[in-house]
Length: 387
Image (cartoon, rainbow, N blue to C red; front, top):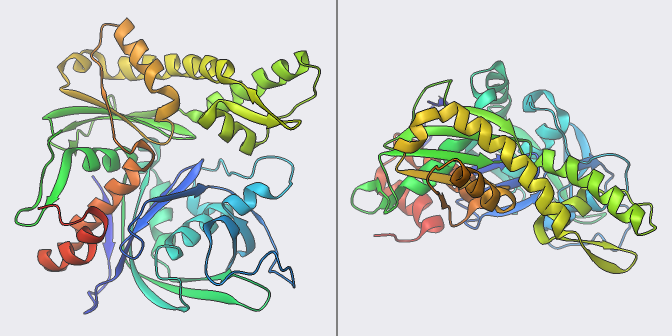
């Protein structure tokens, strides 16, 4: 089900950092910073601040990330999105460990999960991969990369930076849908440590929308059913972006404008139904819905073909991921058209995977450390005293 590597146990307990490096957003949560945070998965070559008074911070700010790693100096996240460049600022390379931009994202995301002070930190990492990549050597290369120690320097001004050296104590890599199902089907308990949640069902199907892929899988009692015919990956939000980009060219041409939507424009359009142009907020909800409906039909057909008659035996179908807000109502319509049952939407679809990754990390660390200590150090900061 998963791959796990552990080094010799240390007396001190490491920081736990969960990262979900999507093609659209980098999501993270950690024992040091127990609130789930998302930034754009954007990276462009950058430069260290040189007397620019606009770049002068006392601490690390997500919206102004300038980092130096072994790969060089880069603008990351929202800062990268603001840099005027041609082409996309997001990588589409699935082999993350072989892509220097993805390596920068992983190391930045992990380093953001420990205290914002110069120092050396021991870290246990949990992340995930799409279904179609999990059984490939892509996973092996990612695991090898993540196990290596690294240093990230966060530039706050021309004369001030914070440098974090990260020593990896363990790496867990799971399938993307396992994160959402763990978050939905289990909860922590002070006495039993882990118990089924109120929403727990014996047979569950999940559709996990991501920027580049949509993963689907079947689970029994919270454990993925290992079956290549019912678990797979298909198109994601990117396909809707591509369709929307073309529709907006046509829409604005008819308005008398020559317009080419940037990644940032498309993000806003998908999120709010508007784009800002020529000093105005232009309503593009009809175009967004049209694209989402087209892509949803393709996704629904592939999922239903893969699940076959199993769909009618499911007790619960869960939809999750950062793209769920775009597709959920259209997927539901497609399922109802085919006389299939409805499904539940997770409370925090954008963060359901990374929260599940973090839960998995807590469970994994309980194999090494006393459950009570794990509960106090890792569970309580994020999920509170749940029992």
